Length: 367
Image (tube, rainbow, N blue to C red; front, side):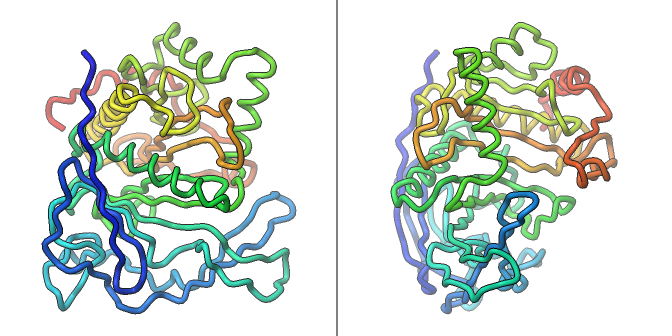
């Protein structure tokens, strides 16, 4: 049965401190309060980047981020809709599903001033950082979104990527979610972030390089071969949703690492058809629910959305989502060891086939 994609709505606003805010919804947006900001004054952001000559990568410095909000009590949750005008938050009251606004404490800004010369190759930290609030429910989870809302989130990620691509400055966009104090989260309200870079970061660049190499050598997109191989093997598949599937990849670095991939090779979220996006959203939700049900606790994780760099068309690049769960067993965290931190060589305690079997067997009736 083909799903019907619901109508989506969006409205643009400007905060008192000058930052943009976009509200998205499955129904017409209704705002019933003033557009707020925790402070009427903009933060003086002067991010700087320095080049690491041996690793061949940029390092971001943003001293102003030391003042950002850290695990506030519920009554001072900056991501909840404002309830007390004397204590404004980031969001207004009203009817909408998701919200996106410029990070008040960004690691990168489009108007970063040129810094004075430093001890290394130094330049302005040019880029952008946005916050994506998944829900008005402060106690909720990303997986609590309805199928339609999850599809809307994919649409929002695609929309933000397309917007950044238009200016010609941004070369790569990474949407991600950190969840859990175990991974350093400072706000529990369900939300993610988007980092837009004026260069191609090392991970995206390496993925592109290897995907191009595979296609040159085999004549077929890497993702097409990957999906065919995993469907044929079967033992690492978690859930096959037709136009999308979830899998513990055969090269998983984290014990329950999960990838969500479309079964038709595309490089950007905006290239998915409506039906593919809906399937992708359902498989993503299924994967998140399984991770929470695995040990009966909210799994701390890092979710990253990998899309092609924006400097040119890169059809070889495989669009996919990676989920890194940080529990390897009940109550046991995955910490990076010396070989992983020092050499970049991961050591996994469990074969992907075993981990995938455990995730397939999870009972989703009570999550």
